[in-house]
Length: 537
Image (cartoon, rainbow, N blue to C red; front, side, top):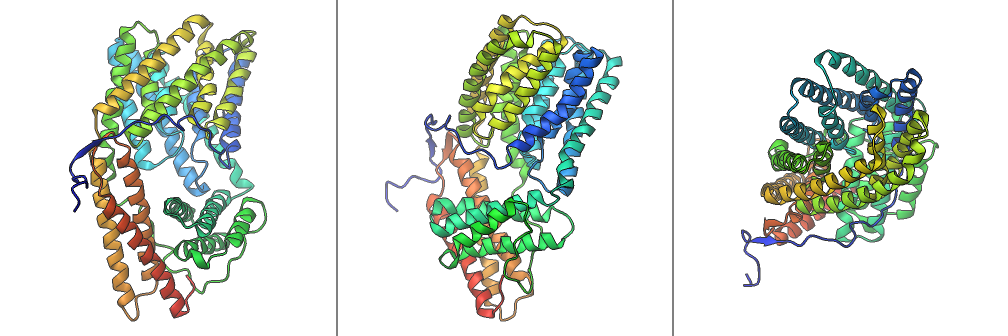
């Protein structure tokens, strides 16, 4: 080994990036769905409160309504379960905040409770992979409720409002299934086909990870969709075609793959891929991760609890009247590693600072009357969800004035003070939150890479054994192939997460490259074996 090769245990300090942090990406192909859903979920309750003259209750109705932001990429059978859990989680966090607010007036105790609740919310959302907007909306509601005047006698009624609007949000989230019952599965399959086409045209290592991740996501979507209808079977055959293209890109037809993807995004019937005698192994449930999830999430939970608590304490020390803003800012930062956390911090600060300027421009309009206030909030709700997929800072430009306007539901606020406190809390939350992320180093990220390497090797050995058998069990090779594909995707995700830690032992890059190359060659070998036997996978 060359003396220039870093020792595997030698820690390395990585620089934090600035270039590209604010670059805009392409909008999500369903950006309008969460944007419209949140407006439909929020508008009726708020307009009802407006008619009753009780906008002071809007925080509790919005707690349930904002659940409509979740689970838009999931099949409707899985979405029904996910949304139900989100509503229950939202109400639970709100309940903890209200009970704490009614039992104590100590701001230090309330900040501590908010930090612990935020850590639990972050851990649960990451463990269940609930998807955007993740824990941030839950933390915003639970933290705000900590500092809302409350008595124990009021808690049941306020929770009932949140549950009722949460049920309405559940109906809003499920309603599109009446018109396109297979919409999420079709979109996931289309993404897999497009990714496979891109890889077939230019089989670069950089495109391989994204393509395999898209195929794995399509399988997970289909496997969570419930009953295997004829439509789902047709989609499964298309995903298999994407798998074949990844394993043998030279033999793939990118134009055909893209044509199938375009058809899936429309309303036409699902394209029929060449008929397979049998879809082997498709009932094998994919393991999302081969690692002990809770153990891997422990450092993130500690970062969240520590960072949120310290941010709230510093905000209190500075005399800010709403320390939960600093707490929520810190909570919003934490991503898979320090590098991504840094990027999110920059985006949050830029978005919030521009957002307070937007608030200053809009607040005269909002002060024209309660109806104007409600309509402005609805507009910012839509704008936030429409823009946030392009880049987090762009969506924050709408989130910030919306959050500031929500404080006006309970009564008129002095704009200058609101702006000053929001800017202070943004800077405090971002700075203190990032310091906590640096202080709590996620050294287990490197362990995940080692475990992923071992999982890839085991999966390769299983396939090699099956390939050597004259007559492997039906479905065994396909199942083993998907286990290996999952392990390769997990390895790439683990490497990217570990690479973003600022202080981490050097990763076994050569072993990773060898494992990925060998793994993809093994996947291709399974395709060749199918063709030799005359079975189309």
